[in-house]
Length: 157
Image 1 (cartoon, rainbow, N blue to C red):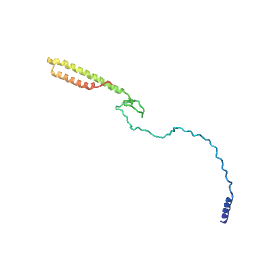
Image 2: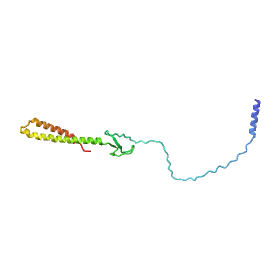
Image 3: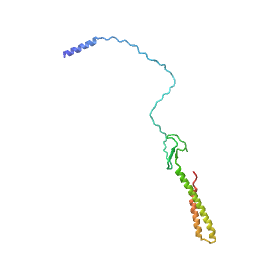
Image 4: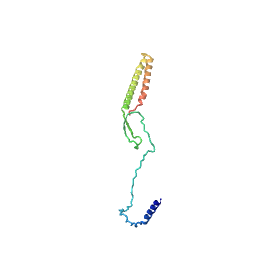
């Protein structure tokens, strides 16, 4: 133990006895200098975000059909009455043509029934045919007119 105390004490004295030479202050390194310019500067920062409209509208078609084209981009502003989609109109054209044909057939039925009524009226007056046949022809005319009335409401699209 004595030996270790003696060794520690001598090391301590040796460390204190050695004096360091004062350090010289070194000159600061030469750095480039820039002049400051005053003015307006625009800086841009990018931030992740998502933008949503105040009102989000879901658009659905009023009729079932095959969609041919979408005429507007998602999120684009649209005006009232602006077409948004183009549907395949072949099935609708076919239905329209069938309805127009039914309208013409109903008009033909009205004309035919009117001819029958006009034909039976003088025959009933001359007592060649019975009143029942005239009434049957008049009923057929009424039915033909009733069938023609809804078909008359069609308009060409």
